[in-house]
Length: 285
Image (cartoon, rainbow, N blue to C red):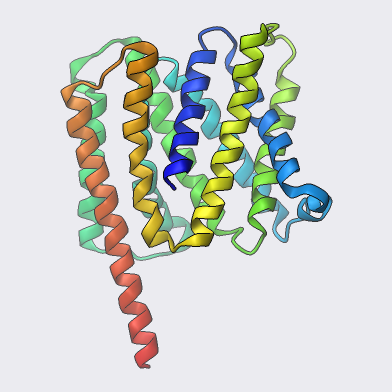
């Protein structure tokens, strides 16, 4: 899971840097196109077998959600520091808890609602809408808030495809994104130099490798063990932001991040505790 976070933040940093030289469509295309090649290599001779899903409609919807999340995130991270963008995206697991009520019919108790409220308070501190920080910051924050919402919807959809092979899900999300962005590519293309091609190939490789590590993480250990390590991404986002752009999070971002991470972990361990009690009751019955 730690390797997964390194790959994903490397992907985010590459895309943020590439957006300074290439269009949003081209950078998003590169991420999916080269990730689809990586996914096909992982599938090997089983690629055509793995391209078949038991729930193709849900897989396509999931792919659209990931593609939308990537586009919105790219639009947002081009305007905000990498660490700030990463912090706002930490809202995703909190939003998953909210969406699980409407979509999956799950029940959420008062304690978890308190955790949700704490997470949104942290987001408000990061975004600081009362400060009027400028049109660029506000626009970037709105893009990222929308990305957090579509990402949480993507995670809900992922629960619906759990009976498919993980490589099937990887293949669907990468190839669907590549096809759609390829259709949008004419008129949004700038011929890359050698370094530009390295960035584009690197984005696909980092994204594909990150998803591969994620699959391995959840196969090697329960979600309750590996999921909290996702918050290590803030460390890498801060480091990359400083080394590449000379950015450091301000005090408000650190305070907001602490609230969001604390709320996310509280909700996560609360759900884990309730799942443990439910399992114990079923065993007793």
